[in-house]
Length: 242
Image (cartoon, rainbow, N blue to C red; front, side, top):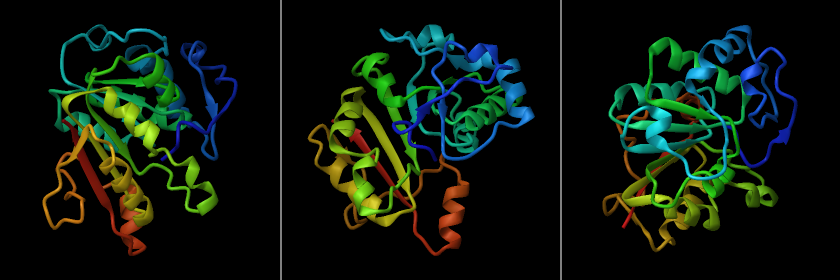
């Protein structure tokens, strides 16, 4: 899954005019398929939102009032589409900068008729800072962010104290942050960072090590299956704003 903070600008594909006003990025790997490019054209006007600093009107964007969940870095969108399908009562605002991933989720959302998904192809940090209001979110999902394995790269990890504080301030009281990773050292760092945030409370039961069982709504992802095949564990954390 891509980290939205460390991408470089590039020119959007010429055959996707809808994206011309949306900031786009070049990432480490991946090419947009014909089907994904077609999804931009067919489903982009329906599901893509432009990044516009200022107050975000969720009811206008989704055409209804419902709990708002922010998903950061959805990869190829399979898990996002699944969750949106099993939680039709919630709205999902999804941030990803990976061009093929956005195309893939557009295709899934369009083909499955997932009206509770909207996509921002933009840096999630800037979306939080300049587009979403504080206490506007009912939940945040960040699944399998880049663990930046080498010690000298740990400073690049998304889950750091300032960012978690920012996320928390954007949650409504009772809102939650759900993180998942298949890299145990990162899981421990996540637990430490979220545990140190005074506005958050861990929902894990005593004796669980601070982690929760995988919630039913989150499907097994390719990242999770890969980790399990390599003998890795997978760790889920769910904290709520007090």
